[in-house]
Image (cartoon, rainbow, N blue to C red; front, top):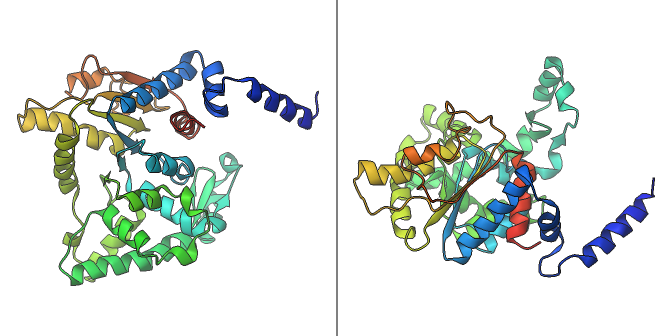
Length: 343
């Protein structure tokens, strides 16, 4: 077999010979991703690119553990380059990007996670590690480090009779500069920091089902905070309804869904809600749809339903460009983003 150095040399020469209209990763994708899920990836990327070029806007929805997978390394640049206009994410993705920002050096990777016994898992718990697949988040350095700072934001709002959305409290904490003393990654790799600096709209359905949500509930139980200082999921939906009405003109708003679950199911429903429940019959459908998912296709599953089913629910139109990439989002999403950024 050739030496590794020789392989690297061949690869370098290959890239030099590629189409110079696109950079290395994009050219590689265009040349070799020709069929099946690979072709779907290219079609979705080109559709996304066309949607933006024609004046459309895009929502990205983040499910799973994409922040712990460090998607921020490339998603932050997508935000800075205006390739996304709004994000819907779980409470976990909201906070875990910031945890990675302030506690990265204390994370523990477990490559052999498939071989862990219940006893091995117990030892991780006793050591203060919370496992997400092959990555363990450190309790003290991540959760507790953020807790004292986010509590001050909550306490200040209560003292001043104010109410904010969950992501707005996170933005306030980031922009205050209080966390800079803890930074352990290049801050340009934090998508939440990039979003805060642009005041990017975010919707966080089911925020209560997150570590910070649980911590907030504990303060409410102890009587130190009032639940009302955090705006609710219903308020997120009413805010999203206003945002959608104000941004769906022209080419409209596209929907780029990473994974399944509430991060996608919640915001996509704003269209049928406006059209069917509010009877606003001038509301356009989502004008682009792509889902990256390894969920088994099933009509009994929201996450596994094919896009055509969404037509019957008034979410997508018959002619809406629709793409499904049945693969691991930690592999696919960075490639699509690299295409959009011409990397």
